[in-house]
Structure formats: structure tokens, C-alpha cells
Image (cartoon, rainbow, N blue to C red; front, side, top):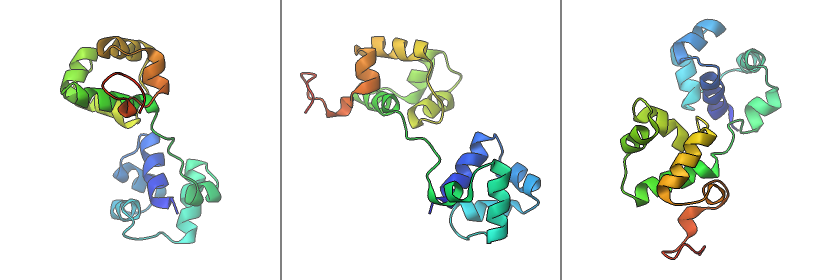
Amino acid sequence: MYLAENLKYLREQRGFNQKELSDALGMSRAAIGNWEKQHRIPDIETIIKMAQFFDVTLDDFILKELRPPTPLYAKNLRYLRAKHEMTQENMADLLGYRGKQGYGAVETGKTRASVEDLEKLADFFGVTMDQLIKQNLSREDSDGKTK
């Protein structure tokens, strides 16, 4: 079941914190937190209400992971940053972001990187855009060949 993960994902996608969502749904913030942490499971009426609120089917809300997979480029950026012993703050500075949170969201796949940022990072790390986007760079040896 994906109820907890989907609840948190959909809440974040809509820009709600737990308190704002609880107010919109007429329930307590603690209940939202308990459901997201899988400490409790809401009753079926509440699940229906949340699915309607987020405009998703019950099947999708409960049985399907709604968060899209982390893009390969995000995993590659995390790998390249670590390989070059850089911090998220260094990367944020390189791209002109205000703090590591913005760049951290790119590495986790929560925020999509712009083409311009990907080009800048590919150039900085000495890889092609194709390599950054399509290849798992963590599986390459020191000669740049895939293991």
C-alpha cells in the first residue's frame, strides 16, 4: 500500500504543510502526521475524502506509487558531487541558487533542473549531456568505461 507516501507526496505537490491540509480537510494536523508516518491508517470515509480532494482515484491513491521516479541525472549529480568532494552548498553557489535546499531538491528529484543548469553541470564535471541524462555514471570505472 502507498497511502502514506502518496498522502505526503500529494500534499507537498499542492504546496500544503500538514496544518494547512488538516484545515482544508477538517481534521487534526496530528492525524495527517500519523497517517504519513504510518502510525495510523485513516478510515475508508477519510481515504475517500482525501482522494477526492487530491482528484485521484482510490486505486491510485492506495495501490500505486504516485511520486515519479528520481531522474537518472539527479542520481548522477549526487554521484559526481561526491566524487569531486563537493558539498550541496558548493553546487548551489555554482548554479547561483540561494542555499543548499534548492540544489538538494534537484538531487532528490523533487525539483526538475533546467536544461541550462544541466548543461553547466555537464560542462563543469566534464561529461556530455547524454552521459549525465542517460547513463548511470556511478557504474563507470576510472577509464570512463561502463563496468
